[in-house]
Image (tube, rainbow, N blue to C red; front, side, top):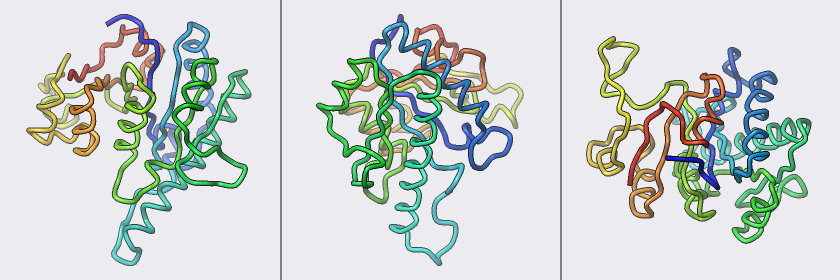
Length: 234
């Protein structure tokens, strides 16, 4: 695979919460930041999307309207990006948080041209707030921003080290895919990423690499093309 030049890193909110499963775990966020700093120092341009699951898991009852529930989720991702971007700044990185809607002076309204300019200058670009619309997950926002920013690959950091043919927690004989075609994910509805996201990647030929965030230097290895995760081909 070789080293990628521009990547979009998708982090789950839960991963940033560490053992607490809610809020932030500073040690975890600093560890992620140090890996991203290594990449930037090696000339890799990094954009980041973070999920909101450490604050909000979507509508859990009929009490709240789906649109409002999704809006809360979007704001959860904004909080995550503001926090993590400031951890990155503490580590000496330049950062910019973009949102598809105005958040006063806290974030910058998303512009492809400005975001690409930032990436080329070594700034880590955070794409917060999802797509700005309800009914789209952060997976969909990840695919959309990766395509818009002309990234080489989506690096999807998970709690598991790739895609398996069955649940490895339940089946000790589960086999991991080294590579998997994106159209298989769409045709078989495998649920690795949501269907909207998968179709976007399929139509726009955007490859993905699914790997474990828990592996030492997992992010660096993924961006350098030396990860043992699952490559989703297009």
